[in-house]
Amino acid sequence: MYISCVSGGTLKMKNIEERLSTPIREECDVLVAGGGIAGIAAALAAARQGGKKVLLVENEFSLGGLATLGIVTIYLPLCDGCGHQVIYGIGEELLRLSVKYGIEDKNPAAWLEDGHTDEERVKNRFEVQYNPNMFMLEAEKLLTDAGVKILYGTKICSALTVDGRVTAVIVENKSGRYGIEVKAAVDATGDADLAHCAGAKTENFAQGNILAGWYYSLSRGVKKLNMLGFCDIPDDEKKKKDGKTVKTLTDRRFSGLSGEELSEQMQLSHASILNNFKQKRAEAPDTEITLTATIPQIRMTRRIVGSATMDTEDDRLHREDSVGLTGNWKVRGPIYEVPLGAIASVNIGNLFAAGRMISATDRMWDVTRVIPTCAVTGEAAGIAAFLASEGEDGVNVRELQKRLTDGGVKLHVSDVLS
Image (cartoon, rainbow, N blue to C red):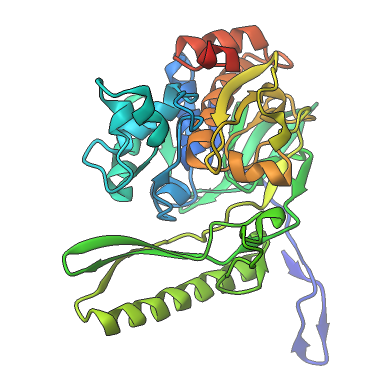
């Protein structure tokens, strides 16, 4: 390592050149990068296929991502809003897991219990607000019981791609920098970090993210989730029905792809929380903050480019290569089939995306980035990576679909409306 420029007695760093020899210290069949909901579903699905070593790499020291550490603790609907459940498999399993120790709000009893009418299911969508801490702990146990190895505090640094396949992923943690040989990989980082490192084609979200500052408080014996700022607002939804512009904490937008910017965003979020807390404290002196987000509440940054790109106009569109279904949490009615082409990298044969970074238009990301859909794409990506770890180019769609349906997943609109 050397510093290339020293001028006038003052050290001026222009460039540092590093020559690295990185040791390979581990190997696995399927590597899942990111331990949010998508990563949890991917690792679980891959491990349940049996006979493969599955490794989950997570930068933080807890699972769940925005769903736990970001305290976006609303498990949005598994239904279409018209009385039809559309998300099954691990998507439903994780919802049930989230309420194992009780429900905070939006009780989905009409769906979880027998004896309820279709009218009740239409009125009450299949969603819930859960406790993030208990969900996080149970999700970790679920993965370890399935045989998934979890590496916490581990960041993806680089990747080696040979002949259009990822062969090794470079990570760094308290043990230093080292490589992990892989046979297939799932990028569930939320920011397409692994895909970017591997040379996969990606696109950035141009609109940027709105500032948010969600936190839990306790006042007069009542626990409350305070939702400051919106998760985000697509450009065509910035105005309310009455024509007024939606009020936000700041006009500034955040790309989520800059370390300095993310640091500033977190500080602005903290300041918003503190100001809001002071206002509440003035009204109720016993008010206290019980939990704040420990990661940036950023929703969309960078995504893969797939051979198919989902869009909001794809409602009821039949896809021969569908790997799951999702509804639209914002409106009642739409059902979308998720194509394999939206989760498979267009130029890296053994790399799959799960979660908010699948191939989708800017309008569609606000539908596909949420918890239940992340579970859907995670389950499909995990099994696809399992199959791709055999070394063949591409994935046998029929075999993938069979394994998904064996796990209870519904693939086509006709499967839930017939």
